[in-house]
Image (cartoon, rainbow, N blue to C red; front, side):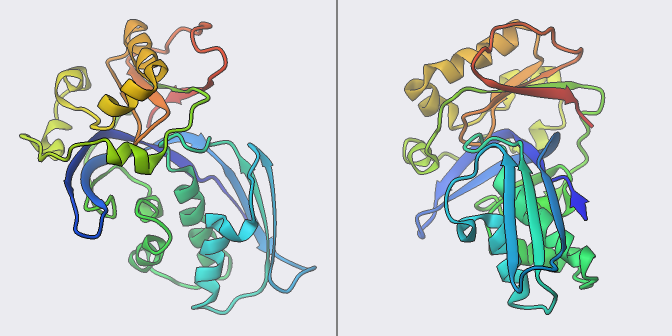
Length: 272
C-alpha cells in the first residue's frame, strides 16, 4: 500500500520554560501542508524481517536509525504480522523544521495498522507514536493542532487556511535544534497563541512570532533575508518553521515565480 506522509509548518512558536529534565515546554500550532514523501509498504516474499530502500533526497546512515524502521520495530514488538518491504521516496528536506521524519514514522504506524488489520485505535497509535518523537503523534490524525508540553500534548483546533497559497523556501543551511534551544531565553507569552490564531491572517505579522528567529537570524542572516523577501513579495504572514531552516510565506494569491531563491529548496501550492 502507498501513503503520502506530509510535512507541517509551525504557526508561531513560544518557548515557555525550561523543564527540570532539560527539555523545554513550548506552545505552537502545527498545520499540515501538501509537501509529501511517498511511503510504500507491502508483504515481503523475500525476507523474514524487512527490506528498506529509498530514492529522492539521499538518506545517509544505518536504516535501523531511520524513524520508519523504528516505527516498524516498535509495532512488531507488540503485534504479530509478516515481514515487509519498505520503499520511501524522500521529498521533504531534512533539518528544515517541517517534521518530515516524524510524519514518515507516524504514517508507517498507520500503514502497518491498515495493511495487517491490527485494529489499533487512533488514540493508541498516538501513544505509540509519542515513543518515536515529540511531534510524531500529531501526524496520526493529521489535522491542525495547538500543541503544548514538548510539542507532545495537543488539541485539534478550528483553523482553516483553505484558499491561501504557501511558498516554502529552505536554504542550504542546517540549524542545530539543541543549539537553537540553548540560545533562547524562555518566557511565558502575554497572550495565548491559541487565541491569537483566531485573528485574520493579515494581523498575525504583528502578534504571532517564532522565538527561535531572534537567535537563528543572528547566526544565519540569510534565513532572515528570505523572510523579508517573502513579505516584499506580498506575503500576509511569513515565519521560520520550527527551529529552521525553512521559511514560509502565506499569500492571498499565487506568488509570482522569480529567481530570488536560486540554490534553495522551494515548494508551494494551495493550502487546505
